Image (tube, rainbow, N blue to C red; front, side, top):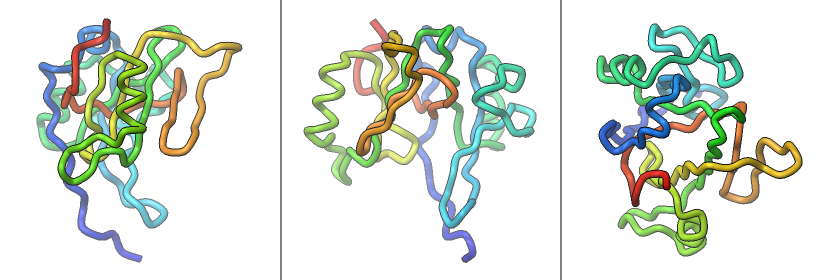
Length: 167
């Protein structure tokens, strides 16, 4: 099957991204790639080589990734989660309707976590970043439309903030 029309993604608003994220050298770029009959968002280094969410040698500074994105070669930027950073990423899929309303179950997660929340690049999901660690050495978990990770993954970042920055 050939790739359908390339998706359109939200523009990145760098001024809204918290300093607690931008000051860390844990950034990658990404672009939509048609793979296994679906669009994926693999991470790239700013120079166009593939990046790995488990290899710090392939990550870059925020500014470098932002410039690469602004050049038009990539669809967005992303933050790599590591245990050392102590930042947990929460990915809430398909929770915003066409009218921009957040589903009650997702709003409950937003209210409970009380941290930096933004709209995902598709416009129909949320990403939440908060300080913390998982109990017992756990590094990730998925349940229904919610994924929670502390390392080994990256989350796309748009700056389409729904609330305040990290407390």
